[in-house]
Image (cartoon, rainbow, N blue to C red):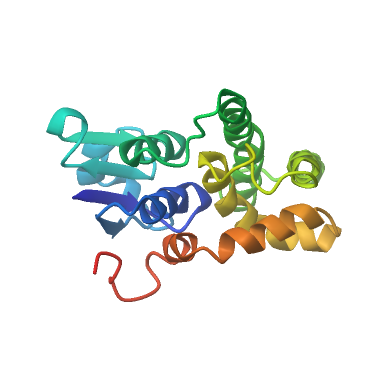
Length: 212
């Protein structure tokens, strides 16, 4: 059994999505970061960095418990645990890893900066926010260009798609307002139609029947 400690944020929902898609048995625990749950001593013992998500897998490598942090690492861990969503063809694997890293370094970081600027930073700067938004839109546009000729990132459904989708879902209004990324919108609809993605994105929104 895996215990998932997370919140309703793009980083947090990545972990729920991959656990659902991988078909792994898990228990979700809400860590309300707006209320400061991540600073509680019990949670700090799981992750001294005081950040979600965290998974605790009682049946980790060699049958030993393992605690994992960082959403990207959790996505890769779950995919490797079930041997899915990691292309075996070397070229496709390289492409998937390229997009996986681009999501983590460009899209996720820019999106997180905008969120923190709006909610937590002590000083606001309209000019800096506009600059970061343009950077995020450019990163999304690069992904859109790839999807003009490919169905998924890496030419098959992979960890890169699951890493990106929660960021896309949270930033869809921005893309629609800008009138950008029609190919990314098509991909987003394809991802949203997946049962595992839907259940992961709504992990705390309905009765806990994920393991029935």
